[in-house]
Image 1: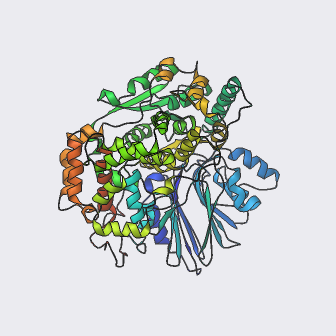
Image 2 (image 1 turned 30 degrees about the vertical axis):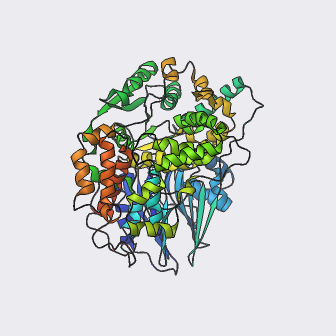
Image 3 (image 1 turned 135 degrees about the vertical axis):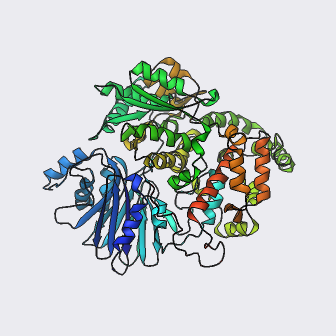
Length: 640
């Protein structure tokens, strides 16, 4: 696991070593073991390494035999041994034992199609010296991040946004579309960052930069939810377990010990159960609990641990977990509204005291319909029988009701149908609320760039059922933008590699062929997955209601953290006040105090304020002028 960075210059000029080193210096926690740089005419590649595979001879960048192909990678290729054996049979000679070198030789053989042979989580860059082109690729699901941008005659990329912001030439002007998107979904869009001109390479995409500055993006994979009714339920269960075991085994490939994050839910427990079967020694497991019983799952994690005989470690989280909020903003890299990043950081820190690598159960809810929102939509679809005129009238009544009044959102939501209703369910702040939140001049800028919320919804798959459409939306949007983002940032903040066997693309492809009625069976979520796990886990774990990785942030914001939040958002030092109306922020805080569930809205505001304080400074001009500014003091300070 590494943090990678690079600079390519369109006119073939020299890359400054100090620029590359500056970029890598912001990512020390991604790779605390060593730093390495590669410089050639018109190109510079750098990385920070966390050594997992090829401990002694695993340094990057790696080359092919004649040095015409150079590779840096963040991630792991789990089928590299199989690929290496095939490549050696074709005459390729390897100088290291690393998975990264496999990419160099595979690129020689297949060019840009090399990515289709890889099983793993990755973001990598290939410098093709002969063609003078740079090839970037990101894994199919979006487990590992990759940012890029064109800055003058320079093309820059890195694992983290702050590595790019470390370059003095990079503007710090906000992306207004991303700002609007943040307060709609709690994240920034799939293709853009919070900073104008700096983009994200989407999951399952490649990008080619050629001398002269031309860019070409291309998608190379997409999950297709097409049910296969030829298999019986019994055969499906057998095949599902075989594929689960294969994926977990593949994700155990490592030159260092591998443990697991264990929440006590079905997905993480399933991964640990298979690991326990495959391992000759007790698996080390790690979990987080809360003193507030409504949020605490640690009792179930302990039961799973006892049942499977793991070596279990746990930590009870208290409100002081957010006292060092500046660190949270630094590590998250962008504003981020999902408060479950806090326990993710804490459990990663706990695990990192014992291991470098763990597996997790992320992805099970998206693949097997585990979220409550699928149940909600199943129930709400029954209301579609209500005549549209009546629903529209009730929706109009809802719009006339004052904000915060009980029943207002229900009536407005009732007027909607189909995918529009599903979009509405996932909004943090609806359109009218965001217009009240932002200052007038910001609303004008957002209107110019257009609202990017539609981007969260992939093109509908022709003929697919409603459940598959929602699952695919979650797989392509919510999963990489929210779940995998928080896991990557919070684990890497602790120099911990987290692997996700349920998101191996072969496993995903099989799960997508399971009929929807076996994923959501009446009102039972994950029906087929739970049937597969019978006998592997206690019935109490398989039958209990999904709890989710929640945090009692609402209570914390009203008590322990209330004064801190007011100081952050309402004081004269507030940076976000340049963009949002303080009166409306006070309104949100008042609604929260009255118990109206505004905790995520408040936390998103906090996250945005913290990001602004960390990455913007007083020299930044908000609107209409040159946004260029040098890195603010503290950006390049040691974060180790």
